[in-house]
Image (tube, rainbow over the protein chains, first blue to last red):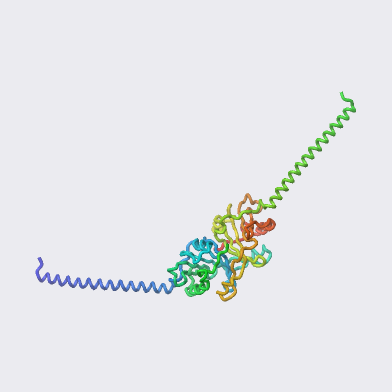
Length: 195
Length: 195
């Protein structure tokens, strides 16, 4: 059985322990909050760095199996030849003439350098044949329809990948939307479907 | 009993009958041969008319959904832009680098006129952009692998269709194989796969 003194000492010890526990708890909360804030800051910094909200950073899987929307040729500095492809949602909308494109639609384009084909020219007997050479600096580009996520850029998220499959710098992607705004009347998509 | 004269006459008659028989037989053979030749001529004429043995007269169903092999641009008189497509058998062989192409492989190409895009040029701020216009005179072409059926033309049957979807004239298709012979080393297929 404990004496009164022993009880007081015990109570004092208990109170101190309680205070200590409270302090530790508060400190842990503070640390947790700081860690939380730090995490948020890091995420925000990453977002700014990688321009996350309007740019898509993943190459849509299976894009190389998509159906053809059309083909194009950019002369001048770009000097490329292009296949414009669409995922099933995009192709369906194109074929049905539906605008705006439905959620989930993705339009992509592959660009290869526009090179003369000696092989073909020799067979034709004249210089007239150009074929797809190596992938260009902006090898792959996609626009992904998600009206909520990409509300700031007309409902489309834009992406561009170099020949190494890595996203091109954010600066180069800043030009996507301002340019596509010119074709707002066709839901920001330049490429028409070729039958 | 026959007199010598009778025998001589009889012999003469017999000889004449023999000669007659021979003549009839020869004539029948000649007629048969002529009929035969006529038949062959008719078959040949039909072949030419329908271009049956080496030309394919049906547009392969579902070709517009096929995957992209590559793109090309023929300048000069053709002035077109092309998407080269392959059915699943052809695409698999292309991706695996398999030659010769397996039975059932079909390689097709769609050709649209190569036209400047005012819309795009306005946005780019310079004249550099060409897009696919209307289908050309030789809108669709296919080569179908069937080593037995098309043995005479390297194992490939050739076809060409105008913008109305009807086979182009046999004369224009006569040039397919002589031209494709130049690329016998790649199983007669000019188009390379673009990654």
